Image (cartoon, rainbow, N blue to C red; front, side, top):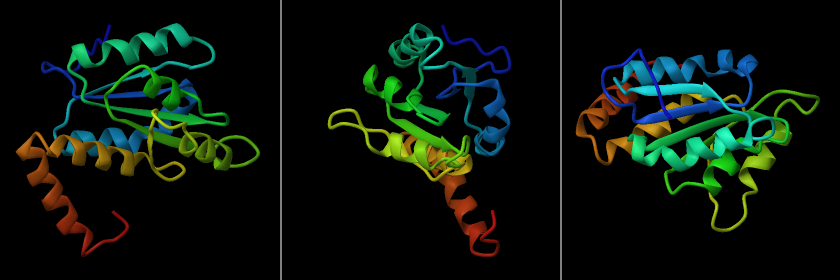
Length: 162
């Protein structure tokens, strides 16, 4: 199911969002993963408009070599939870600042998952932190990612805006 013509190696991270309008909010995640040399694939999959596609992604991700899933959503923000309900792979939710509550509704939706269906959650519009967390999870298994993360974190000492 996962197809990415841009890479020769299998992606380790799957990034999903429910709307094409939200892809621009994820640019920092894409850039950081590229900086770390982590292959990823991205797609649009709405938990509401196309739940079958979303569930298929969640169920097939592990056999496709995906090791972490990042799911970005605004408003009711069901995408991360739907994915987490159908996989044992770590899911990181990014609440997006959309609608009249500027992402607070999405944040509360993602962090209030029922017992047994956890979603790690970053701050509102926290795409870069989601990518960093994904890399930290991968660094448990891949030493080269861990080394790159160490170097990146050293740069934070001089520029906290990074």
